[in-house]
Image (cartoon, rainbow, N blue to C red):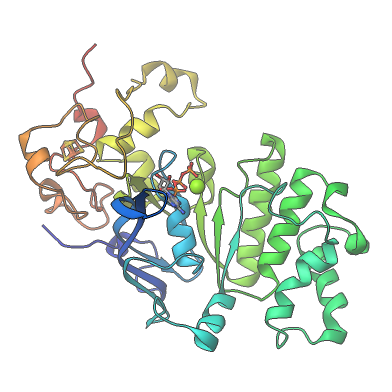
Length: 360
Ligand SMILES: Nc1ncnc2c1ncn2[C@@H]1O[C@H](COP(=O)(O)OP(=O)(O)OP(=O)(O)O)[C@@H](O)[C@H]1O
Ligand code: SF4
Ligand SMILES: [Mg+2]
């Protein structure tokens, strides 16, 4: 089995610079008990050993059910949380243990756009203050006398009237507020934007506008995106590569075509089987995989393969041995450009056509 955790070998434009190299990243949140004497009784394994690369100019989509650790990954990459262990290299330098000025310089280059444009903007600040706030921390990017002009430029770039600079967030629609959030994310001219559910709180018609804006800005500024979303169709639309997460792990990673048209992991297949297909003929022929049972607690994940309690293909080996995220043995002989040749953490990885549907 080829030990390729990053999915790099399958990336389009292989050889492109890896801006971010994440390796064996772990975030455990302690679970405590007691009022006077708090003692740790366990840990929520929110992110439990994940590895991936983010290349210059690409969009890496991250999908998975609620609670699988997507936002925690976003917070680790943007340094809003400290990892329990593992490394995040930015342009070759391990940034996980940086502090002071060195950390500040890296944080400037990796910005986050948040999910809810209604709560993530301070209602008492004007749009000018919100978008220009990052300049307080990094005055070298925009000297005081130049800020108003810079903020107006940013508003213009995201399609807002620069004259709205003195308005307050409540005077804008949801889509406009998300544009304000994006303008703020762009203020420091970052190279990487981590967008955590940036369109989930918006109406469908507005979602497309914001996604299109993000695509345009990516081309214009050569940005790399990590794009987290529940909506698998939106992720497909915007992503070059996609990572599928389950209970703190990446279970499958590959190009958009590899993941959407040739998934080999049962969890990915189940997720995708629930996405409606526009063509009624293929929609009629499709078999929906309904996953039984709840997602297990991340404080006490199943042994071996974490998906085994809900997987219709599970066998004894799945309980005994954790599957590595690598090109599965049965596909190792395929050529790297064949779509099944991508990392999938399953002992019995197979294309959907050969998957036995669930009984009952
Ligand atoms: N600060 C924290 N303290 C304790 N547990 C946390 C903390 N933050 C997240 N968790 C737990 O870690 C797990 C992963 O949470 P996370 O927010 O990363 O999931 P998610 O994939 O973003 O979910 P959603 O799709 O609902 O946004 C969850 O079980 C969550 O309850
Ligand atoms: S390793 Fe086993 S339990 Fe896990 S996804 Fe594959 S078949 Fe299912
Ligand atoms: Mg989240």
